[in-house]
Length: 566
Image (cartoon, rainbow, N blue to C red):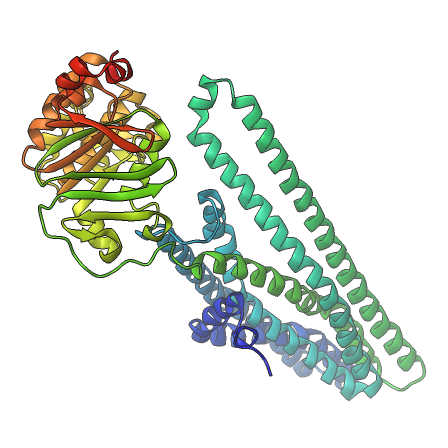
């Protein structure tokens, strides 16, 4: 008796079945048209044999004209069936690949990350190359069936001439497929490994691009490049291995097909020499031996493409069936509520406890950057609630009990390295186009000088990752986006590390004014932001060690003074 796990279909197979099921109509028409194409191709040498046979017997212009007309019909059928059959199949293939790309991208953009164990670069490779190769199954099956039709038509035609010729084609085709099916398994395993290594190389490139400037800053770029070279070399070696396997497969398939064609030709020649078949049947057999090479090549290539599609489908399943890292509840917090951290232990945090009432502006001076990063990650729900001890409450409700949509709606955490997207200043500040506080957010973040520099204003173009902006401009743009969201609770993590002291003073003053009456937490060591806060919490060694206004702490806490004074 099989266990439930053994009986459950593999996710990669499920993906292929889904692709086949929802394209059954296009595949049916494509199979019919491609079957007509292959039948017409195979009918051509048969028609030539019949023409030779009857023209030599009748020797009349009428028979010749009928023969030419028959060939014209066959050629027209071949041309039109190929044209429209491939159009239908390629449209279905492209559409199906698009569907899977959207599915993978949708998983990557879900509010709760999935536990797939993949980096963003790997997910990108899966959403592009693997989605395309999986969708190839839409073309593979009709071409497989149509090639089988051609082989069967040829076998029947040769069998009618002489049963030995028909049997030779059938037995030879079965033998070729048996040999190639064994080789295709090697292609599948090699392809899976190649795709995994290429994805890892892509993820390494994405990481390098993101951290290139910091790497240059402390001289770590050479070590990073060596690391990428190693990963890239592994991907190249595997690609060479796959190319070798594919080459061996293609060479073996071509050789076996040629041997079968030569065998049919020589057998037909021997039969004609002995008088067992006519001259017309010999012409037909020789023509079929040549024409059958194409459907045999397609037919023998299909196992390889099936294995490649399956390997890609199994890689897509890594993303599509991966469980979310956390399961959230369905509750919603009270609007305009506060934030409470109750005895949280995680990473550098130990029994962290503090409360921010609704409408208060609180700054947290973290002496250890790791503790600041861990706190920001917990509040941003990048760490699932079950991964840390204690509780985080938003509007009086525990974070674990809230739906992720409600958390995103009420609590916004703006990281110190917020992403900048290709588009315009406006689309980066207000991606949804619904914010009513864009102008106020631009002014509060001191982005006004960037807007004034360009004739297009907020419609000035921004390159991917803000490549045409300075570090300070990118940071202010990210801050403007966070302020424009106007969330109930806003958490800012080091929002002014890349701006000068004068601009920082203005930003602190404007942010405090704009967020008056709204719950705001700033994790920072900036004196300007600490001074603008209603109170400051000192986070040292994972716990809150002091609490007061910035100026009182400066006057009475020497360690605080040394930590934040610039």
